[in-house]
Length: 232
Image (cartoon, rainbow, N blue to C red; front, side, top):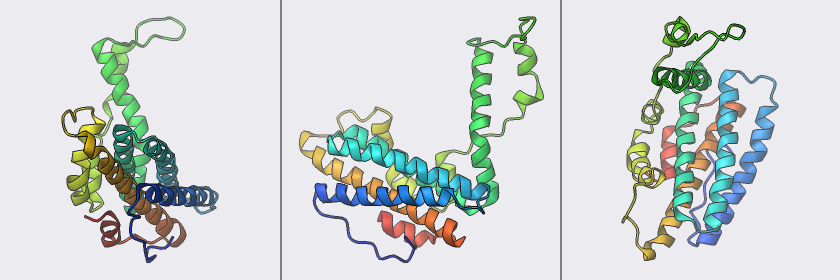
């Protein structure tokens, strides 16, 4: 799917929207398998392929909840796909960003372990002596050398998608965080489902294009193309 592809308007009916989403997800899954096998993949390419695979997984879940007409689940999964868009855009910009993204899970595990150790919810013991080594570990360079995490908002800004974050992400986060009480009437459920699936499909299309452009052409997708697909 080259970035100059002419995209069709969104289907006006809900069922047609889901069919279109399925088509894109099937193509994205095929692309991910193809891209993963390429011999010249470096750290940036591997991170991009991971993001595409992650998006495919989330999109399948989003389609399942959309078919069952579960508005909160559909909105929450559409938000997760949008997050993946911010990350793949961030990764595609540079090898340095890809390296930070790849290292982040290790640093996050260290950060979580340090928090639990400091709170006394966990402890570290010597393998043979069973002596408590918790304080020793906490004072070590291993636990001190943890860089600050980059937030979703930060990644969106770096990728030039701050407006997308501000216009869409904050609103749907209320539902994802379970704090959207009294924000929906029974009559609004259908339109909310359509909006959530539309947002998820748009974000997924952007992820497809970003992966395609970089893996096949080592080309940065223009921000204007992403903004046009998302309609913001």
